[in-house]
Length: 497
Image 1 (spheres, rainbow, N blue to C red):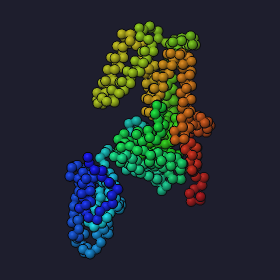
Image 2 (image 1 turned 60 degrees about the vertical axis):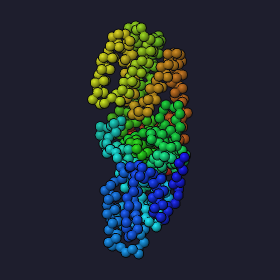
Image 3 (image 1 turned 135 degrees about the horizontal axis):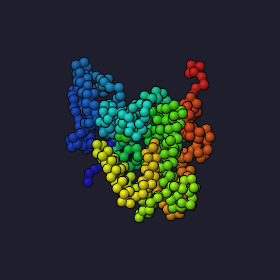
C-alpha cells in the first residue's frame, strides 16, 4: 500500500528534502511532462519545477538567463531570497510556504522556484495553455456584430469580458474545484450592481462541491448549482459570446466561467432569457421585434402544433368548416400516431448522425435522407405527406429556438403532449398544456421565479420580453436580479454628479 502524501507540509530548508518530497508527490522522474531544472547561483542551489506543455518556454528561458547574471553583479554575502525576487523579470510573482500550494500551481502551468536554505518558494505565472484563438461561436452567429467568442482558456475568457467592461468594480474571483482535477472556476460580477446575497449563494454552492474532478466542466458545475434532476428545462443560460455575457453583467447577473469550457454560465435566468438572441439587438428595434416574434412563432409551432394537428386528425368534428381540409386525405396501414413517433425518432437520429459525420459527407447524407428515404417512405405508404410536413415544421421551430437546451426540452414536452392527446384526446391536450405551465411556474432556481415577468406579473418587464425596446428607453435594470444600483443611465454627466 502506498503512503498518503501530505501536501500541506511546510517547505523544508534543505532543498534535497524538497526534491524528494516533490518526486513522490508529482512523479518527477516518472511522468515525462513534469520536471526540474537545477542552477547554481551564489554557491547555492536553485531549482525550477515545471509542467511541460502548460508553460511558455520563452519566458522561462528569459527568467533563467536573468538569474545566471546574478553571480557577476552580487557578492556571496547578500541575502539570496531578496536577490532572486528582485531579478525575476515577470509581473506576477507570489510567495508560498506549503507544498499544497506548490503542487496546485505547478500542475496548473505555473513554475515554482526553490532556494537552498529558504522555507518558501516563488510561484511565477508563465501559463500558456494549448488551445484555439477566439472565433465566432457556431450556435450564436449574427449578421452584424463581433466575431470573437469564448475559448477553452479561462484567462482569455476573463480578458474578453474585461475588454468590454473596463470598470474597476468588475470582480473575477477564482476557485479550484475537484480533489484531483483542481479545475479553475471563476465567478464574475460587478460589485456595486450584483445582488450580494446571490453572490454568496453561488460561492457557497461552489465551495460545497466535493468530487474527484469535473472533466465535463460547466455542465457538472450546473448540476451541483441548481440540482436539475428530472426537469428538462434549462435553469441557467449558456453563452459563448462575450458581448452577451457583458450585457448580462450590466443587468446584475453573475457569470460562472469554468476552465476548459468555451461557454459561460449566466445566473440567475428565467424562461424568457432563453428565448432572446443577440441578433435582435444588432438590428433596429422594429426589425428586432419582428425577428423575435418570428422566433416565438417557431417555438410555439415546435411545442404545440404537432399535438394539436394529431388532435384534429383523431377528432375531425372539432375542425371548423373553413379549415376542414386539414388531415390526411389518404388512408395508411400505419396509425398516424405511430407515424409521428417514427418520424420524430428518424429526425433525431439524422441530427445525431449529422453531428458525428464529417462535414463533406453530412451534406450528402442530408440529401439522401430527404430525397431517398423521405420520398420512398411516402411512396410505399409508411408515411402520409402531412405527417412529414408537420413533423418538419416542428423540427424547424426547434432549430429556430436560440437555446439548444430549451429546444431539447420542448421536444420532450412535445412527445409528452402527443401521448396525452393519443390516449385522452381533448382533455389530455388541455391538461397536458396546463400541467406544463404550472410546472414552469413552480420552478425557482437560485430563488428566482422561472416564469418572471409573466408570473409574478411585471407589466413593464413583460413588454420588453414581447417587444425589442430601444436601448435609450431601458433606463432600469431588470428587477429579477435585485440589483444594488437599479439605474442603467445617469441623469447627469459624470462631472456634474
